[in-house]
Length: 107
Image (cartoon, rainbow, N blue to C red; front, side, top):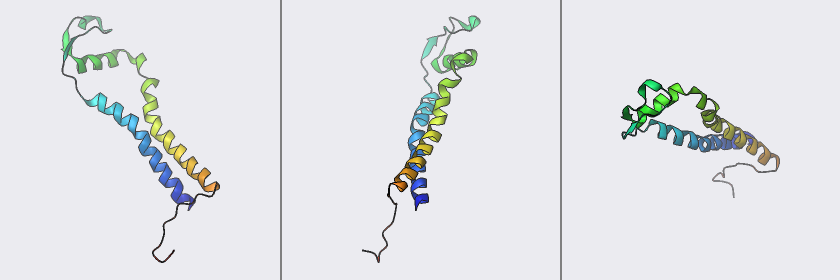
């Protein structure tokens, strides 16, 4: 029975952990079509009018130092929450909590 409890809490933790990652990816994949004047680190394009999406992509490609670990945590959250869910299942089982299903013949 401990296996069922651990699997249920592991999956629940993984699904809960996907929320910040999906929020980030949705905001990354939606395009903002408003025009802005580029003021990034790439000198030849400063002052050129372009879309916000293209400007942010240029900033990402030229300013690698700003990425790195800043978005890595989003990919580690689902793994960390699933591990915490599994550990919670083990601790709850040690405390006497059992995940069971009532059968039709049982009272």
